[in-house]
Each structure stands twice: as structure tokens, then as C-alpha cells.
Image (cartoon, rainbow, N blue to C red; front, side):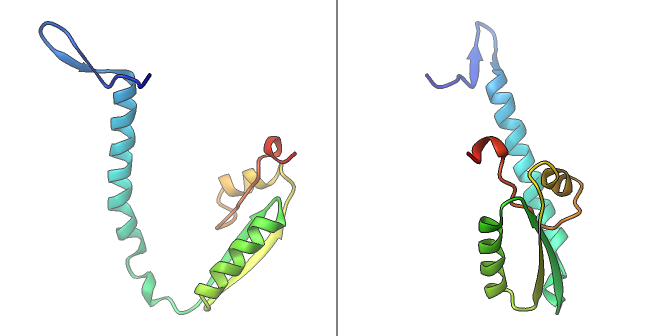
Length: 108
């Protein structure tokens, strides 16, 4: 059964918690859609860039780095491998630009 988004009574209609969550999410997307173009404005003039990539498994990260490097020739990617307990903190604290981190519970 799908969650109800609106409830109606005799005198009014109100949002359900599911609808409130949905509206909050939609508002977040609208705000992000406005912020992204402002943030990337001017980056097209950058001639050289560096990208710090960390991961706790080399296979997915190296594939991402290879694909990115093929598309963006003027970007130097620095790759480092970390254990699965350290990698999420490095990404969370933004010490790396990209961090494909595999959750230990899904890693066998």
C-alpha cells in the first residue's frame, strides 16, 4: 500500500508526515538546483586541477579515476587507499574530493 500524502476531514485537508517529508526533499532539490550553477560559475576558466581520491577498495575507485582522467585531461588525480574504518571520516571531513567507500557490512 502506498503512503497517503493528504488527509481530509470535514473542514480541511492536511499533509501527512510522508507528504511533509516529500515536500522537504523537493525544497532541498530546488535549493540545490539554484546553488550548483552559482558555485560552478567560473570553473570553466580553470586550466589545471588536482583531485584527491580516497577509497577503501581500489577496484571501484581506480575505475572512476580512469574514466574521469580520460574525460578531463588537465586534472591530476591523486589516489590513496584507506581502511574501511578511516575512509568514511576522511570523506565526511572533506579531506578528499572523492571517496567511493564500500560499507564493510556489504563487503562480504
